[in-house]
Amino acid sequence: MNSPSSQVSNADNGVAAPQEEPTAMQGGLSFTATAAALRRTESRQDDDPLDATATLTTTVLLDTPTPTIQSPLERTAAPTPMPLIRVQDGFVQRDGAVTYAFVARNPNPAQSLRDTKYQVAAYDANGVVLGISGDTINEIGPGQELGIVNSMQIAAQVEVSRIEVQLRDGQVFEQPSFLAELTVTNPAFIPGDQTSVTGTVNNGRDRDVERVTVFAITYNGQRIVGGGSASVAFVPANGQAPVSIPVVTSDEVTHAGFWVVLSTTTTEP
Image 1 (tube, rainbow, N blue to C red):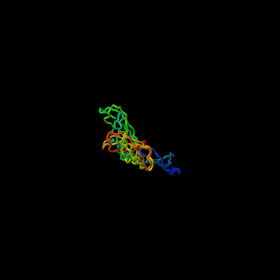
Image 2: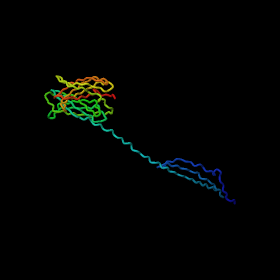
Image 3: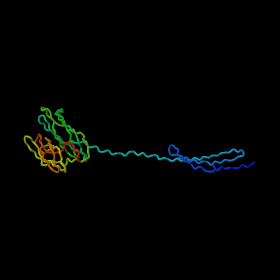
Image 4: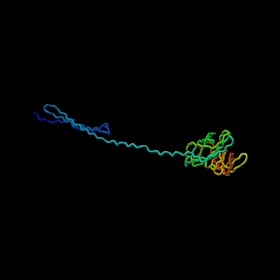
């Protein structure tokens, strides 16, 4: 009887190169490395070969860092502009016409207001509405005070006891207003059948300014006693233009205040 002998096949004598295949795993990435086992065939007397195969599997889990979700940056809201403030008002009644005047102030130190609508109502002593009037303030600069004069028609037989001025919010814009560069000097009060106040409009800009309106409010001490308005076609650059304003007054005039406004909203810097 022949002694058992071991025979190793040359084809089975090598080691197969490890193969790596990515495998999806919950919570991370998995890599599987498989090493082909050495295959050894043993010869027995009964020539019954026995194949032994060993498989080595290594699984490596790589922790995936949990992403940090950052909340969006908090935005600081722009300050809400403050509405115009009514400083003072007054009126004069002549038959079926009421001339009213008021002064408004823009309390915002860095914001101009445009297209601010106003409404004025006239009441009798019992609170009955006798008339309503309104218009638009085209522009008022930061921190500026502005005088407005207008009129309304009412029944001739009624008597106005008071007026009420309402101001709506205007449109905000950040560009500085050049209205402060338009001033009135050399004021004079001219009595007569048609009382008027006169003055000189000064333009401190280096360009012409066209279509401006000049409001004049007349005072007796600190009390408003009347007013009027007039248009000026243009004021030359760094120049002057005369203005004469018819006014209606209810008492002796001690002084007058002047305000120059744009007849239309401007888009100039």
